[in-house]
Amino acid sequence: KVRMPIFGGSQFERLLSKATDEQVTEPDWMGMLAMCDLVRQQETSTSSALSAIRKLLFHRNSQVVMNSLLVLECLVKNCGQPMHEQVTQYEFLEELKELVRTGYATVRTKVLALVASWNEVFKGEYRYNSVKEAYDALKVEGFQFPELNNSEDIFDAARAPEWEDGRMCHLCRQLFTITKRKHHCRNCGQIFCAECTGERLPLPHFGIEKEVRVCSICASKVGSKSKDAAAATPAAAGSSTAATVAASRQPPVNPQVEIERRKNRRSWN
Image (cartoon, rainbow, N blue to C red; front, side, top):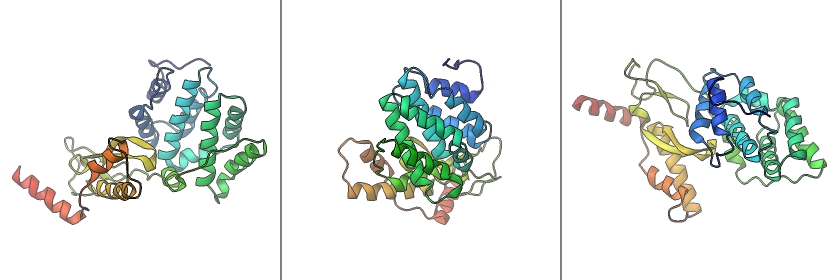
C-alpha cells in the first residue's frame, strides 16, 4: 500500500505517517499522544482515525505495521467508548483475524495480544461481544494467545477518563484568560491551569510511558501507587520504574491545603 505523505493530508494523517515510518523503531509517544488529543477533542473522528490506521495494517514493511498497531493500542486505551465502538466492529475484527493468519510473526503476536486484552477488558459487555467471538474463533484455529500479566491495568487503561471542560481551574479556582490557559491532567481528565499541573509523570496504567502533565493531586496518587509497587517488586538500579518512584516521592496532597499554598505563593509574587 502507498504510504501517506508527511506533508499534506490532515494533521492526524501527518502525525500518523511520522509515527509509523519504517525508520521509527521506538514508540513516538509525543506523536501518539497528539493523535489521542485530536480524537478526544473531536478534531478527528474515531472512524477517520481508524480508517487511516487500517490502510497501514497490511503494509509490506513489518515495522510500519507494528508501529500502526502501537498507535491503535494507544488510541483504544486513551480515547474511551467512541474508539471502543470502532475497533469492536465485525468488519475490523475480521481484518485483524486475517492479519493473524497472514501477517509477520511479530505482527501476529501483537495482534493476538491486543485481541486477548480487549477480550478481558470487555468481558460481560454484550455490545462488545464481537471481540469474544473473534477471540474464540482464533483459539479454535489453534492460535496461542499470550498470557496477560496486568489485566487490571489493561482494564483501567481502556477506560481512561474523558476530558472535562470549564471556565476555571479545578484546583485553585482561578478563571482562565488569554494568558492563564487551560491544561488537562492526563490521569484524572480534569481541567487545570499550568501552575496546578506542573508535575510530569509516566502513566503506564494508561499505556503512556512518556512523562506527561498531571495535576498535583494525581501526582501524589500515582507516586504512591508506584511506591507500593516498587516495595513489592524492587526495581533494578537505574531502571525506569525506580526513576519514576524516586521522582514521585512526596507526601499526599490535601486539596484545600494546596489551594491555600498556591494563594500564598501568588500573594508574594
